[in-house]
Image (tube, rainbow, N blue to C red; front, side, top):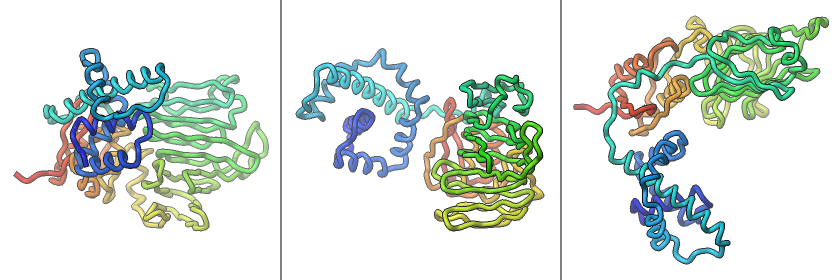
Amino acid sequence: MEHTTEYIIYLLSKSKLEKLSDEEQLQLDSWRLNAASNQDICDMLDNKELLARDLKGLSAYDWETSFETFEQEHLGTPKTISPYRRIWLYGIAAMLIGAFTLFFTHYLTDSSYQDSPDVKILPARTAGTIYLKNGDSITISPKDTMLSFTSLPAREAKGNDSLLISTPKGGKMAVLLPDGTKVWMNAETQLDYYEMDSLRQVRLIGEAYFEVAKRYSPSGEQPKLKPFIVQTGNIHVTVLGTHFNVKANRNLSDFRTTLYEGKVRVQQGERQIILSPGEEAYMNTGRIQRRGIDTEIGNALKEGYFIFNSERLSVIMEDISAWYNVNVVYLDHEIKSEKFEGMLSRNSRLKDIINVLESTGKVNFKFKENTIYVDKKRSN
């Protein structure tokens, strides 16, 4: 198969404009899987922030000549298409070719890494947005501690039985929900909360620690039991009043519910697990399983720690990426499965976190702007 740089640029460009043919997709997949560095390039091309910086160099790029060459060598007989749309597609494709060319040149030839992360990279601070049912939104600033809906102006607090709360990369938030439940949200987390007559429900992507209000008394009514359910994908965590942590990425490859007080039921289809304090439900080969945990360590998210208990490096770096708002690129993909243990403050400088991981002698890190490059430790 043809794996020249020019042809790969063409395939990458076309993949952003229209669907590749089966043969083209096979060629691109073959090239991507041929080397870890090729996969890294694809990962970085999907990073809009990195690509945007390279697009700034397009003003000096001869895109017309580039596209003429691109068309002659690779497009062959053009499809029947309106002149105006053809011009538009050519312009976009030419811009992407220029961007990809700059990208290849920059990332395949530039080896000027830094030994330490930029000192401007800081731990997560309070930041996020709350979208209210009435259409208003509230932007959270670093000076806020725990936002309580009981302290909001009457116009904003009224009728909030439905809320959407999100934190960005590099952000965190603590919020007191309308029912009195306290929630500590990790970076890059989305929480969709709503109430019905029979229950309170949260849809969660990311990680949050919950202290659920057992008895809910709206508007001074007689307190009543109202189940609280956290849904993430096809998994439901049901409680009446308890302290627990839920972590789940979008595809549930990293899912866990950790119980500190009370009881919860974790359900996945017909399968369900009842957890007691000191137990955790987690995902194993697509099914939820149970295991014990050390509750004396305390809750990592609420109490401000990273706790790695035989944790895969890929999971650790996902947490670091979200907390410090950095990008992560692997120069060696085998290192992803290496496991680490440790307990570190979430207020630590990124350099301190990196130093602890490197002290194991398993992994090496390099830095460039806002990106961490992860490699296996090489023997001298």
